[in-house]
Image (tube, rainbow, N blue to C red; front, side):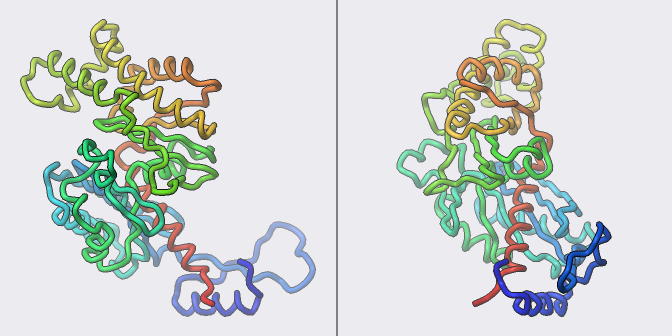
Length: 357
């Protein structure tokens, strides 16, 4: 910590009085070094909780964790995709209350809250909406209704009655995969979110890399990838296969198309190959910039399995000088809430050991 022993002891005394830490047994790992014996402490994990919140297009979700990172409760609720900003934030706040009641803890035990929000650019204390950028106005699928016209931090803070850390949802998902998912052994990571929108995040040495304005890894907005065109073709083929006249294919329709591709149906194979190629070019772009340990594929399309990952790996190898290992997300729909909980946990632990000047 870079402070003297008396200063450290003073801080520990305060934390002891607040019931946030307790003295731990001495380590039994061999001969004790010379000098004053060390005094050991541990967090009273069960008395403190952090909340990670996912505010997305079709759902809100909550993860409650204690200070050891143990998940105490997970909750998820579907919401109307057209729901406005205030109602969407309200739904998330109510779900936190429900999760707290279900976990057997108390609202007063929540020490920190973080939200992963679709379409939000977060860099330090600066939070903005992607559609407010000069080239972002055509990217409606990247943002939530009404969020481009509000002060996100002020609205969320006001409803949660506390300071809330705001993060981009895809960055939170990447952090979760490194914490509890497919990338626990990776320090440098490229995470690709493959769904209606294509998003990505970079972790370097275990930390989210935001860039100057929170735009690092925003390859999904690059028109040269052709992601919107690939998804339009996927939708059309899935609807035709299902014999549906709906405006947009359902998740079941899309999964049926992927199964057909896995069985060798020529039309399905061609359509899925277009999606895999666009995804691979985006991943390759980031891999050449970062040279990571691992690439993780998440998002709704990651559930397609080999039907998507095999053509992706072929295109990825063809466009990358030295392709790292590719894995599929292990956390699925829980990833954003868990990643937000990790952000809240890190922020609170940093606050615990902050020495005021």
